[in-house]
Image (cartoon, rainbow, N blue to C red):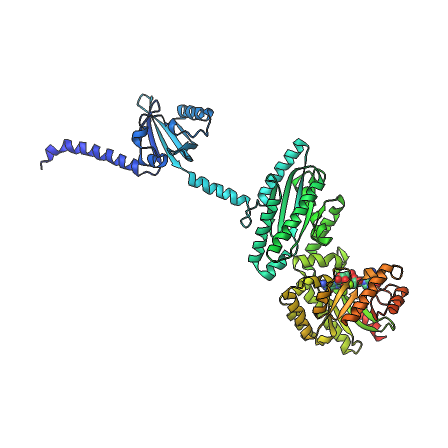
Length: 567
Ligand code: C2E
Ligand code: MG
Ligand code: MG
């Protein structure tokens, strides 16, 4: 071929190639593109435009981009867009458009004006991306940030937002609302003994039932763990909240029993504006009311009262101090003799835990044992009690001061721990105390909860030669069935029935009944809390053989006990 002839054709080719490249580029772009004339009528669209909007080029050429309008934006929106375009030559923003099939979608649009050499607008170029996927991800993130993944309930963040909102509304409308703290009782036990899957299943079931038990406008949130919070908007008063709380207690019990569990809940209620006018005060007061429910025996709801506050501060301080008490060696044991009523001869001693805190002073077991049970700290403390008591009892034996029984109090939480039997074995082996000299005191409520696991532990202890006593007998709901079927050897009559002897006929009858029960089931009976001679002689007359109480013996330190034993 001749190069001279070819040159002009080459130039045309070049232009054609460039145009082709442009067309290919536009079509390869993943953003939708459109070009309009200066009046805004479409003259060109690319392939992505068709893919995103659903409109073919031939359907929209000559039309105004208005066909895409979703109706979600008002005229002011478009006016602002056009005035920015005229002023700056460009506009960028998020815009909701409508696809050909009617679906509305979010897009990120940037429009630029194209001017000729004299500065007159000849065209507009619009480039847009479909951002529905990004939007969905954003929504997903916002959802995750505001919800608890396990139950799907609102989480703490969302609860806080709703609570702020509720305060604002109630302030304006001069109305009331209630904040309810719900904490499952013994949830840790379920997690520990049945596994986290069972725990999770219970939480989900409880969440669903509680959600169903309130109005749609109310909020049921999960703060984490086994803590739920309910926000009851626009209530008439506290009694309405207490009514809902009853439903919540039922919901928890029903969900648990579906899983063969017998879990209950403790509830605390704070009402706006009476019990607090800001988020912090309402949260704090609902929490301290909830704690009251725990203290009062769980499975109940308590409405806040101003007198609770001081005790809340105290409790938080207490829990913190409790965590470190063992390593700081703040615990000690005292021993209270058990004796033969007729002679006063010491037949055994009961170890009682004492906590001496440098700032908080002497703290009674009734105050720190329940929170230590709840937090799980009691296992370690209980192990220390067993080891110490066994070692000290063995030292009295070695000195031939004592050949009676050592009684140690055990909480149900310790019994439920799988290593408990091993802990007892270790304490006996470590000290050399014969198993027959150790008695474990369990509270009456243990008899009610004898699940297979518990029965196994009690039988294993019995097999070791360790004896079992039921403490505070008569105060709970005694289950004779379990009493007969468990390896129990001793019943301790609760102080409450001894206190009002000999005056109270009723208590006399109860004591008589317990003694008869002991006779029939071949159990030995110890009367607790004997404070005077009248009580002692009445008990002797009724046929009770053993007792314990301030009348003859106060709880004393190991050194003091040595002196008493030596006499
Ligand atoms: P408990 O096992 O029924 O212990 C008897 C409680 O009655 C002791 O109170 C004792 O000091 C008190 N007491 C003794 N004689 C009399 C009396 O004549 N009159 C009156 N009113 N009270 C008397 P304490 O030491 O405050 O212990 C309270 C409870 O704390 C115990 O009741 C027991 O359930 C629990 N506890 C004590 N030590 C331990 C421990 O090491 N582990 C566990 N899990 N619980 C413990
Ligand atoms: Mg006891
Ligand atoms: Mg007792």
